[in-house]
Amino acid sequence: MAIPQTIESDCSWLTTLNIATEESNVNLVRIAELRNLRRFHMAKATGTETAIDQGFNDRVLRTWAEQARQDGAFMHLQSIFLYGQEGITTWSLDRLSAFPALDEFCAYRCKIEWPQTKSISGWRNSSE
Image 1 (cartoon, one colour):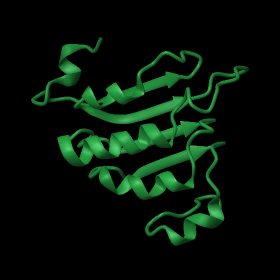
Image 2: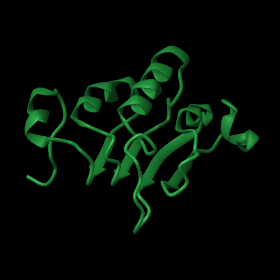
Image 3: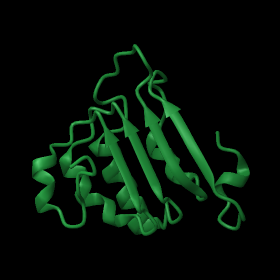
Image 4: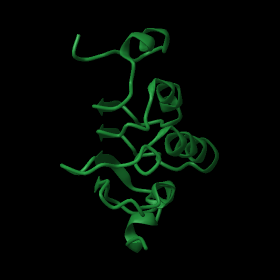
């Protein structure tokens, strides 16, 4: 259940959502209902083992991108920070252009193969 003010499109403030993946029953697709989401952070909880399909993964990002294009979801989303989300791969980077306000994407200890990103326009490894 969402706080009503976070799903109303006329709300005058933006919010940050932080999630630890020890809660495997979180429906990440429904986060698209949060119309005023500015920053999304998801981290693997310390000392936990999370199945690849339980955390943030390529399927969730693909669905979010479709919702952004079709329904105007995530129009204020500026930042996505993922830590230890092994279900996110290099192929997800192509989907990030669906988020109009996104200017920061950090995938730390995920399955991003940085040499492959050179073929994806606009993205770079900031550790180089």
